[in-house]
Image 1 (tube, one colour):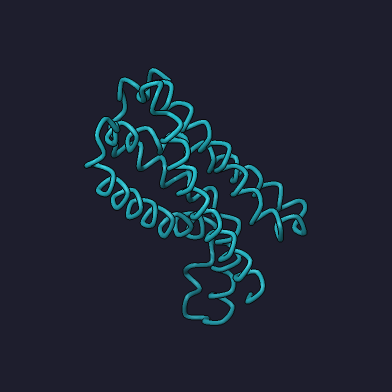
Image 2: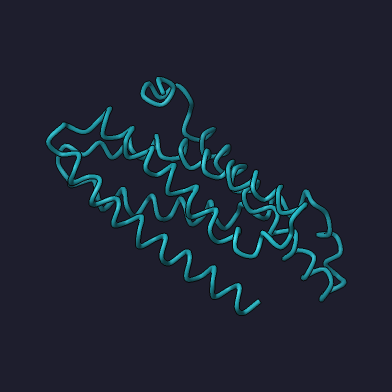
Length: 178
């Protein structure tokens, strides 16, 4: 944890590792999407490899992540005594951990493909929730004053719940449509 508190790693390297973790977490589902495109359109046969599927899996999640973090950071800057810069720096570390857990479960889906139906929706929510709770505990312990931690937990808990509900809704909608 001293690695995070002392900001020993450049944020660009952390974001690169975050992108690769998004690639790892989304690789299993990306393989299916790439195979569907190649099957439907033969001219895209150059995309029919796992390396392409791996690299394409992280593009949209990292773009969404960077956009949401930029919007939230800008909205939270006026809040007094809130260490927004430290929060923005430390959050990717916890998200990388969640993505690694999700990616490891995706490897399990190669052996039990039926588990990917619900596992692709439930595992990301549980993994990100656990690592988000760990992130909040880290932030409250290291950067937030004792009297203010309850407000931080409630505020960010609400934000997480809204994002999680949207994620589950889109996941269920995609499962029904596809």
